[in-house]
Amino acid sequence: MSDTAFNQPTPYTLHLDDELLEVTKKKLRLARFPDEQIDVRDDDWSQGAKVKEIKRLADYWANTYDWRAEE
Image 1 (spheres, rainbow, N blue to C red):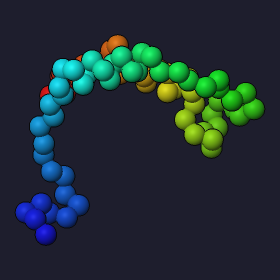
Image 2 (image 1 turned 90 degrees about the vertical axis):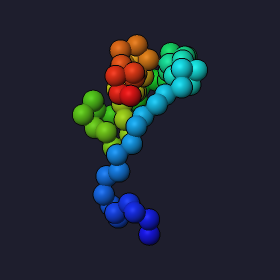
Image 3 (image 1 turned 180 degrees about the vertical axis):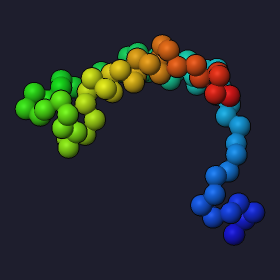
């Protein structure tokens, strides 16, 4: 086993390449989403994440999230 202790957090430095970040944001803006299921209650996530939540997250990551602040 390496010097990294089993099941222990390992510090790292995040660096996002400018081109990769721009491509990621572009893909988030271009993403297509299915229609929301109408036969499942809003609070029922048994069929997976709600489309409106995924859309909200994609918009946040593309337009609001400060990727550079995390570096």
